[in-house]
Image (cartoon, rainbow, N blue to C red; front, side, top):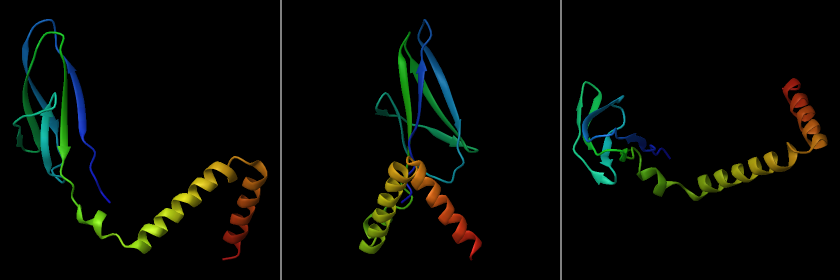
Length: 123
């Protein structure tokens, strides 16, 4: 499952109202779903892999700019088989057990290290 996280930035205005041109370099591999400024969708331009947004910032105002990227593979979430989901769940539980019990106990940790070395040498 590949979901792109939104890009966020906060800009604080100066002592008087100004218009800013905000630019951000984009790789162009993940399409943009929307750009919002203070939770309102705004228009933007992309030219030569540079995203440009014009924003008017009032004095001392904190403005939040968010770029939301489109989900490239939405069908993967619904089509995952029960076997795959079960394997993922088992790996998660085993990792939790390792992190919370084996790695925190000196004796269990040293035994697991020796077993791993033994397995490595006898392949």
